[in-house]
Image (tube, rainbow, N blue to C red; front, top):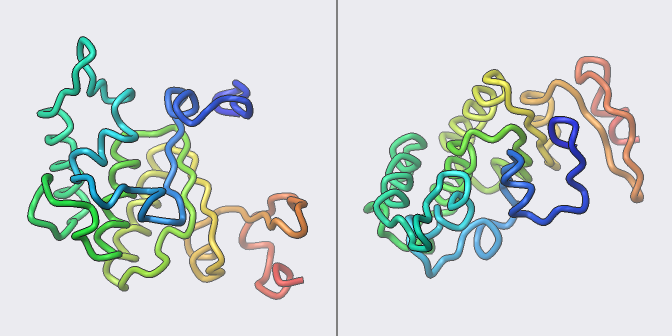
Length: 181
């Protein structure tokens, strides 16, 4: 549910229109298309929410401006919005994907393995961006195998084990040993 409305039967586009944003675990192919430019990759998930289509035509300038905003806001090291996504390092592509989703001001952000495979600097930047987004009122759902990351970023924790979801508990009430069990 988002804002009390069920979304379980809705497709990704309809969920996005309701305020959801997603950062998948797999960067290449799921989070971004390597052969497309960063501008084109912003269009993939932001076209409806940011109204990047006008009278049936893509607002290329608006998409390019948004890509530039993501690049500047998340310190993505690239030659610019027209660079191919495949030209970015893993950490820079992750920052771009995270920034693309966060700068759409979602009501709910689902992010899987937010700092997996990124360097310490990029990881710290992503962590701080997640904290800032949550403090601004976005519901952030972090899916991670990194318990240190969960303990440092989350307010509550729930565990999925053999297809069952445990009750969510305040992070300060559980230990890593309990989670393991």
